Image (cartoon, rainbow, N blue to C red; front, top):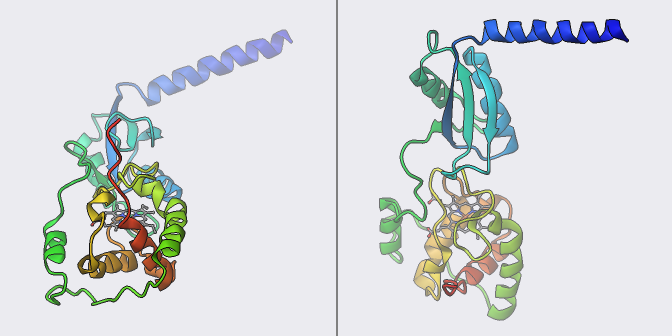
Length: 235
Ligand code: HEC
């Protein structure tokens, strides 16, 4: 028993000194990461970074961060590697779906104003200047369509858009463009259909292309439901 204890003490000391020599003079830096979408992409980021640079990853904090962005904590020796080098290495890594990561700079943009192409698209409903397919809402029974849309929204969309449509869904923390507040479409008339149909079918940045997943009828149910989402009362 005594021998065993001595062994443990010696073993711990050995590891402690080894650790000291290997990581002497290191610093710890935090990087906010854009572009994390899936569990697979959190793994790829870490393993690829370790392949590229001689650093130690302390952790990748996905949720409890002040800024809302996932934070990667990295320990490295500043005599050998610079912070810029780590940032550019992160920017070169591709996730399993072929998207690049990016180190986030500046404040979090929540509910950003529409991008120019979106404003153009919205102004040009009915006019084919933008590549929007003209569509006609085939719904006959709106009440039952909206109620199907509501269920589907909770199942497929709320994790990013939030159940109320406010854009703060549980997984909406690493997005390049934040989902906007869906109540901007409240009571929109049929002129909005081409745009809504287009974005639901094709997706955009972090918005998945639902045309691959949901049938056309299901997407109309969602469009009908989106138009009923109201801005929640301030509480
Ligand atoms: C993985 C996260 C995610 C999921 C799931 C998701 N969305 Fe999105 N959605 C986004 C993001 C991010 C944007 C903003 C895209 C951009 O502007 O680049 C967006 C944009 C939109 C827009 C356009 C808003 C506007 O004002 O231009 C609509 C409409 C929309 N989503 C509906 C849906 C519906 C309906 C579902 C469920 C079938 C859904 N989304 C599921 C992330 C998601």
